[in-house]
Image (cartoon, rainbow over all chains, first blue to last red; front, side, top):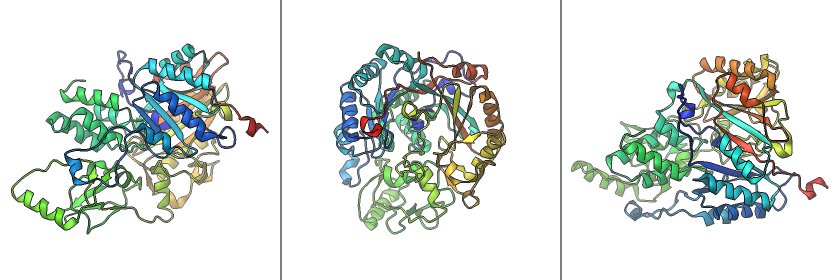
Length: 234
Length: 270
C-alpha cells in the first residue's frame, strides 16, 4: 500500500508554497493481515471491515488482488458506446474476498473516516489497520477514537528526474493510483476531452477508476479535479 | 505484451492507456505495436481495458468508410474492440518486469502483492521499526516513468557504502548478489520495471545522512525517486521523526498511520 503514500498535492510541489490548501476530500483506511500471526478466519474479518466501511459512505472500496467498485468488462457489446452500465458494484468486492489481500476503503470526508475508525476499534478485528491521509487528519482521527498512533510513515515527495513528470493536474489525478495503472497520458487525454465537452468529469473519472486494480482511486476527488481543470481553474 | 496483428484494427485506444508509452501505430503495417524494450509487462492494457469481441475485417471496413467521409467516431476510450492484446509467456530475466510492474502478481520472496513490501503497515505485529529507528522506503520509477535495475543499483551501492542494512523481506534485496556492497544480479540490470522499492532501517540520528545521499544519487539517475520514511511512535502516539524531516526541509504532509489495532491471534500464539 505504498501506492497510497505518494498522492501528489501542492504540498509536494517542487517549489512548495506555504499557503497550500489542505486536502479535505481524500481519506483512506486499509486493513492488512500478517501470515501466521493474525490471519485466522481472515475472510470473515475482511467482510466485517467491508460491511462496517459501507455504513460510512465510502467513495471506493477495494480488494488489492481483484479490484475496486469500478472494474473493466471483459465482454462488452457494441451498444456500450452509447449506453454503458457503469454503476459501482461494492457487493462484488465483498463477495470476491477469499483470503490474503489488502482491503481499502476511501472516504470523502474526515467525519466518515472517523466514524469508520470508531467502529473498527469496537469490532477489534485483530488485523493491522492504517490510515493513509494527511498526517494531522489521521492524528486527529486517532485522538477522536481514543487511539494512540502506533507508527507513522511520511511521504517526502519526488526527486531525481522530476522534469519527466507531467503537470500538476495530471499528477494529482494520476497518482491516486500509486501502482501506476492509471496512465498519465490517458489522464491528459481525458482532461482534454472534458474541456472539449466530449465527456463529463464523472464519465472521465469512471474510465480511470477501472484501471486502478486495488480500488484506492478516489472518484470524488478526481471528479472535482476534472471540473477545476475544465475551466482552466487551479 | 504483444498485439495480435490479425485482430488489431489500429483504433489507437491502447496507446494512451500504456503507463510507459510503449505502444504505437506502425505506419507501414497499419497496426499497433509494442516496443518490447520499453514495455514493463504491467498488463495494464490487457487487464484494464474493457473488451468487445468484434470481427476485425468488419471493424476495419467500417473504419475505412468513416475515414473516407472524414467522420469521427467517438468511441469509449478504454475499450479494445477486437480483444487484440495478448500476454506472452515470459522467461528469465524478462519475467522480473512483470513481478515488479503488475500489482496482481505476488512477489515470490515475500508472498505479497503490489511492490511486495509490508513496511510499517504491519509494524504493530511485526515490530519491524522500533522507537528511535527510521525505516526508509525508497521507490524508483514512480509515478509513470519506470526504472532499470542498473539505476536502482546506483542507489543500493551508495547506501551500502554507508553501512546500512537492507530489509531482508524485500523483493529487491532478494535479487542482490552482495547486499554488503549493494550489488544486484548482473543478468537483470537492464530490465525495465514500473517501480521497485528499496528498504533500509537506520537510527533516527542517521536520517539526515541518508536523505542527503538519496538526493545526491537521485540527481544522477534517469528516473524519479519517491521517498517515504517511517518510525514507531511513543506510548502516547507522539514521534520525533517529523522534527528531523522539517529541519532537513522535507514536507511531511501526507503519510500512513498505523493505528496499533493489530495483534497476534490466540491460535498463532499457541
